[in-house]
Length: 259
Image 1: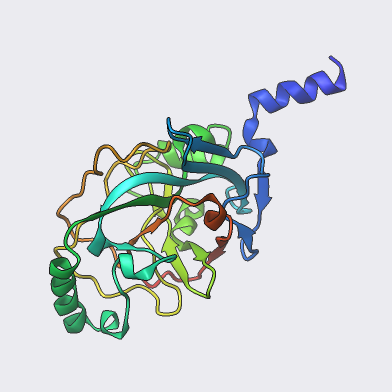
Image 2 (image 1 turned 30 degrees about the vertical axis):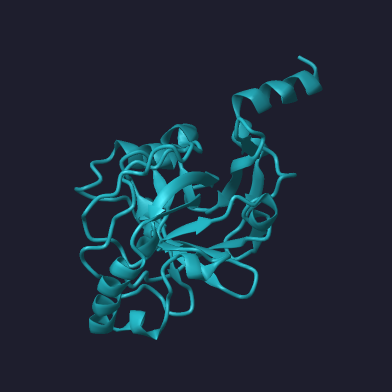
C-alpha cells in the first residue's frame, strides 16, 4: 500500500486523529471554521442555524479525549440561562447570587419577571461513547459499575473544568459531568469564573436530560425537568457565526473540585 493511500485509509478509520490537539491550560478558539471536522448548519432559508466542531484534549492519564463543541438551536426558560452577548435577555447575575437567602429571593423574583422562553444557540461540550472505543483506559471505565467504584484515572476527570471567555471580559466555567445518560463526559451548566459555583437553589428548571450531539431546530422546546439544578446555568448565544468565533476556551484540572 502506498504511503498516501495508507494515510487516507487511517483518516477514514480514525477520523479523530485529524482533529486539533489542545492541552490543558492553553487558550484556543471554541469555534474555528478553518478547523478540521467543523460543520456549519444552515436553515432551509439559508440562515446560520448551528455549529459543531471537534478537538482532541491531551489528558496524559487517559490519552487524547475526542471532544465535540456544539452550538445547537434550543428554546430555554429565560430565568435559567445566561446570555453573555446580551446579558439583559437572560438571568442577570449580581452580588445577591453569592448568598443563599438572597439568591432564593432573587430566583423567585426572576421567575416572575423573566417569565417566558428565549430562543438561541445552546452551548455544550461532550465526549460521546462511540468516540472513545479505541481508548483502552476509557473502555475499562465504561465496563465498570460506575456506582460501585471508579478507577483512579477516570476519577480524575471529575476535576476537569472548562472555561469559556467572551469579549468584554466575562468568563464562565463548567465542571465535567461523567457517565451521563447519553454521553461519556459532558460540560453544559456554567457558573461565573470569578466567583466559583453559586449556592444551590431548588425549584429552578433543570437542563434537558437528553443532550443531542447534533443541532436541532427550535420548533420544539427542550424537555425541562423540575429537579434541582447544579450551581450553574445554560449558556445561550445568538444566531451569529461571527460572534461564536470570538469565544475562547480553556480546559484545566483542579486538585480538588470543591463541589
